[in-house]
Amino acid sequence: MAKVTTVVIPAAGVGTRLFPASKAIPKELFPIGDRPAIQYNVEEAYQAGIRRVIFVINPYKEHILYHFLPNERVYRQLKHKRQLEALEQLKELETKMEFETVIQYNPHGLGHAIHVCKNRIPKDEWFAIMLGDEIVFPETTPPLKRLVDNAVEHDGCSISLLPVPDEHVNRYGIIGGEELNHDDGLWRVDTLVEKPALEDAPSRMAITGRYVVPATIFDAFDDIGPDARNEIQLTPALQALTKDYPFHGLVLKGERLDIGNPEGLAQANMAWLRRYGQTNG
Ligand code: G1P
Image 1 (cartoon, rainbow, N blue to C red):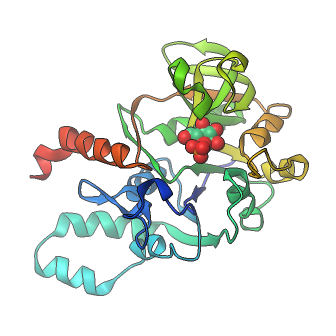
Image 2 (image 1 turned 45 degrees about the vertical axis):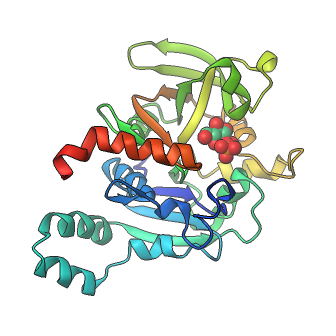
Image 3 (image 1 turned 120 degrees about the vertical axis):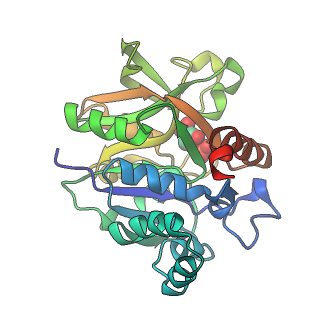
């Protein structure tokens, strides 16, 4: 595999769990500490060597893109006010990365959100996926960089994992496979089941919001119909890839924050305060 240079960030959901806050402002732009939630994911992608970001949005969420577009007026103000560090940080992302949107007109699930990007990614490329409402404050190496490095090393797929308690198993995609290296948190994955009942779950290892996959995943959707809730899921497409590629999971090292509900958003801000609050004043 050559380099992984593109990330797809599905962010088309209307954010019902954060209503009414999310009515006019995309939840992905809600602040965690000093920056919008989605900027953490974009920064993590940048640290993983990614330079092209595709946001999958609905027609009312264009502001996600605006946040990353160069804005000379803002630059002038920041310069005038001598906020040079913030200016440099922002400019680095804006000038070194390319941002684009794909509109998902009728949301039909996570798999569908990925599938609408089919014509944007060359057939022979590999790309990353990061879910827009999950951010991670990493322990050491940013999680997406670990996935990209692993994918390149093995010429295969990588996903991020986290052990979950029994009562949360039916909220996640759950993997089956074999732990290859406990210290590295490395798993070989052969089974992926979307939100199984506890008795059907192949393990307690949940898929979290980061993936590295080949563009051939788009073909896998040809054989995947909608589920009972009329949604096309990503998990069956991942299962299809296990037939053709080495497939690994890496247990997340860091603090995973789900900002898609009020409690998660508040917890993310408290985590930010604990971690970065002092230095940011
Ligand atoms: C999605 C995926 C699921 C994954 C989860 C991680 O579910 O379908 O496999 O475990 O994200 O947060 P959702 O949370 O969109 O229902």
